[in-house]
Image (tube, rainbow, N blue to C red; front, side):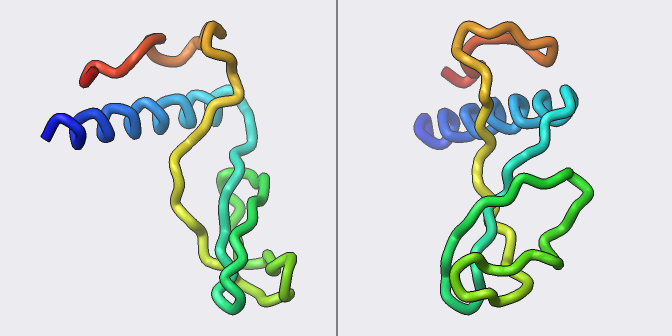
Length: 92
């Protein structure tokens, strides 16, 4: 049970950092998987843009599926943020 709570805490922390980046005007990186060849690739897009117009860079197939992965922050460990508290998870 402790490992699950730790994972949930880390996931929520990642989501909070990602939302802070969106609030500050950064464009997120989305991962897509080609439904034809299985290639996973990344695209930098605005939040409101979808993947309908994307094509696989390997085989050219249209409409890849979005892969849901955890957020990442480009800020260093000691960088200040105007969004949320700094430090570890409350589940630690």
